[in-house]
Length: 222
Image (cartoon, rainbow, N blue to C red; front, side, top):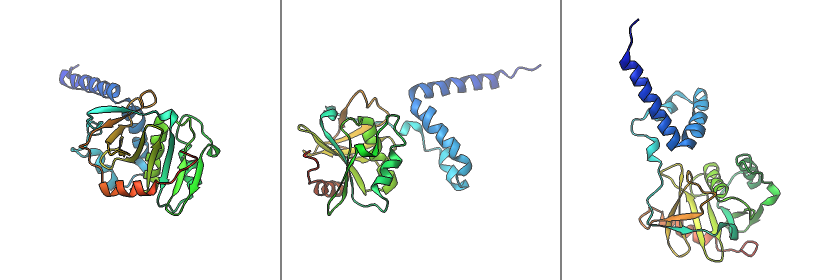
């Protein structure tokens, strides 16, 4: 019986490479990849091509460089999502989001306030840093670009946060005093609450002005 050592060696190396990827990117391999594979039978044929695009890679979705980290007193602050435009009930969107986190929250834990410019969703005080930004991402996906954004406000810090348009797992934003930052969703966000500061980040200044104007009201004395 012939031994095809080259073929065996190839599969050994392939298995080692897959193990290395799984160790470095566990969320991508064990969560995102299985979900995408489950969707394949339901995708139009043309939608399959990006999966085999030689220019795409897991390595592209990395955290943005940062010069320093700005700690966030997240538990002491108020958390909001401002919805500028929606054709769907905010209660309906909220109910859809609450099916995602592993922690349990009730719709009654959230406060919805309306003014002439937008609808504001205030989060419960015990929402985690990760789940709050997951909600910012969820609303952006559901409502479309530039129709919603997150606002955090405490006695020492206020920042505005948006889903990054170039990557899946990064957010970008700015603080009230003009510092630009990113947040990387695959980091240990429930243990480490900080903003990755970098003044060279690309953030649409027109969007910044619009967000500052829209988030000028007080909600529940925050």
